[in-house]
Length: 502
Image (spheres, rainbow, N blue to C red):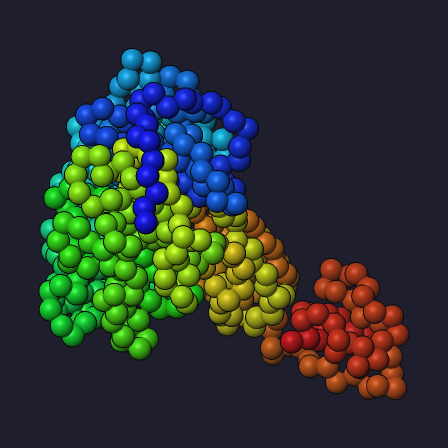
């Protein structure tokens, strides 16, 4: 039985500032009520407690824009895109609002998106983000919070999902398909023509998929290098494809499982969808009724998402019907191994016209990279499996963006996805790992050896020697062959000979 609440007018709800770290939990973006209230952010802490209208609580004089349908936590910021501006007697809100990720304090807001309405945001690096609008993609300067005036996509059509993958951003554009933008210079690398595209997601194995409203290609796997798409057809009818949302855009009802190559999405179900379908790309198994909402509930906004920290499937639902029915809303936190909605995994929101649009994951930290010392021959390239070397508790490791630098370019260089030896010597490789704008840097020693002038360890066990690094630091005194072989990989001087430990 549904719990009955007393209807609370959002406009009259009390606001109070609090000393909260908003990265320690989950944000729920709400559209707000058309014509009367702005978009709003609610906060669910790690214990499941809900705080309401937190952006307004933290910022006197400011609110979000009108019909807030997209948000992203990136680096030190949370970005919120709304379709239009909004103004109250004592507050103003714009199509793009930027706030501090930890405190939600106001940082900037931009009203004019080159005459377009807001759609989405994709953080690129510490200095820029891309803003998707009802008419193209524009560059946002994060130093000055000014928006460029050049549409960097190939069309003036509206933009939806944007996914940063490596040093490219993949953009879903209405009636066009996927536009691929190089983040180093904002140029277009290519386009995958998919006029029926709905949205984008990345599965646990790192495959980028476009979801399409297409009975013969419900999903299209995109090769990130060649930009060739491969259709995945779920045997059945048009009803098995994701539903189109371009007519009244919101973030697509589409999410990838954290640990398996499975996608969860809402199929073509008319105006009151009640079921989450699943598709397993490994087993080719489709389940149209993977999760079913309780009676009298229907999805609203994004509807289905996956928490990268817990792996749970998150659902946002409102009561079926019109008018005051929209004031009753529920959040469900479902274990994909036991996809059943219960009272224990449900939060009933305070009764109000929230119109929940999207879950926003702000609870993540920088990834960590751990590499063993590298030894590479002159003119050879040592491949680097950075994904395998990365630890990241909350998020798909394949979406970590890596930047590599070598301290001494005369010794080694970055080439072909690895490190190439140039001349005999030692240097340091630095790897910066960036997930969602939160970064860490790791350093590892690199030794380049000339195989034509170096001996393997063939030291006589009965003739101990002193061992030095190539910079003259003694690391062993009177060492045996066994002790020498236990050294870290690299180039050494043993007696009067150069040796390499691999």
